[in-house]
Length: 154
Image (cartoon, rainbow, N blue to C red; front, side):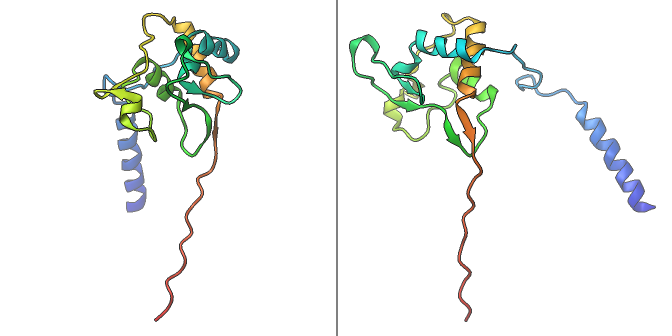
């Protein structure tokens, strides 16, 4: 009987907390309309994202007649899900999280991303399509666990 009461109280407590409002800066409830990956690819090229980023199947270009300054790879196999929210944030606020695996001076100046701010030149539709295109370029692969040899006995 005590186990039943405990389970009942736990269920009631979980129900009450699940109805709590999220923090104002939460992404809960944030949804953009469906996008078009082909239009996203066209936007990727039109906005010259491929001047600094590489994606398999899309040629990298040189901005303003120069050789590409950066070659930051997007897409590919990952062991962690790259969410829709991660991609939107990376585009509209590139300094939020700088690219990993690159020296700081290559991707930033004084802690700010070198990526151009596209917020005033990109429409919401272009953003949605671009995110859908980028999202389609990631493949989730299982994380390979590390196998440790057993310690030899005494």
